[in-house]
Length: 508
Ligand code: NAP
Image (cartoon, helix red, strand yellow):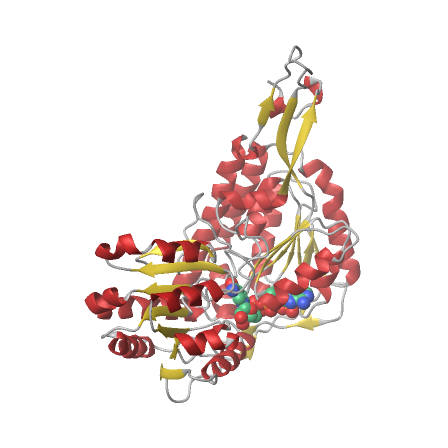
């Protein structure tokens, strides 16, 4: 049941008087439950509790943490239709997407359970002593990874389940041995509370210490700022805008004790389509990309917002076809009015720049939060001359950049900011000529896709979901897959240690 209250450990709490409502974006009305925003006292209480239990939780065995994560997955599934209804009401996303995202969330939790049930993720390394080494003896050294401490997770607006309350950041931090405090996204507070209740039930059923998880509501910056500034918080996970991620990163680095902020932010995900590929299969590529650009109303961090090609005989036909097929897909609802506002404003900003031409958009009146998909085009020279043309337009938008030759296309890539993904669409006979392109993309992105689409992020160990700034604040790490656990741990070495004082896995 949705109460509108915060979870501070296993206790429901509503000490404040400020409330907010979530919005049903399809109907453009507020939902009935008032959500009590956490007060500074409640923030402090949640962090103090997390800090207090860290001592115990960090020592909980991998097997027991795995039980906890699997229990969270079970409890999320047990919420059944109530969760699906809250999700669809608060996000405007369809039921199929809600069920799919719930499946992904459960899969992530179970994957981290499998990971921590075995010890090998800690990269345990043993360098035995060589007492008779000359000229000096070698000491016994043993290295492992240990959790950082309480982690604050900012829920993402565009993944109310998979990158939110029990999403990848929370699952990986709990798996690592860190207590988690979630700052719920104010536009899906009800979904957040339900998932939080599942985590609390799972913690109680598996005997985890009270305080291993808290969920705080808030709109505006007060709650988030207080959490990041709190001296007992030791790391932050964030998915959202560049402005938000950067503000929190700066805040964290200005603390007396700076802490890491793993922020996954903006990306326009360049897609290079060779003119030969356009000549050979223009219609097929246009169809595939119309689907990818509009998937989830374009509200994916991996949405293909930039298409690069060298001008060829069929370029115009391709651009027209892409626009026609994109616009033919029925307009869909955006997550909340602010996202819609950002889409309209940023789309208008890019399309008003010199040389940018709108090729197609949905015409006529749409319901308040529905998005009119938009395809625009610009020359390579105009794109290079004006950084405003590469601004992210979060939603169903893509800008086709028509370069005069290969050199200009490479210059465009070299001038881009860091990106989550880059994609190459090419014909087999061209593969030998693509080395420079691959080199250029390697320097700008975290994942390169060949003859596919960037939307769709498989959860598996080889996935990299992160990239050079501003795609993320630390390109050495990612927010998806087993390796994302490494964000919440640090290495420690034990030198010449008595066996009984070593962590069990290092006692060999
Ligand atoms: P957001 O504005 O960055 O907010 C995300 C979370 O961070 C919210 O909980 C927000 O709190 C908090 N926050 C933001 N700035 C903060 C600050 N300066 N201090 C403390 N807390 C702060 O993202 P959003 O609401 O999800 O969407 C807004 C825009 O972000 C979208 O239009 C889109 O452009 C972009 N976005 C990008 C991605 C991506 O993957 N690339 C994903 C989602 C959104 P409050 O809401 O309580 O203020």
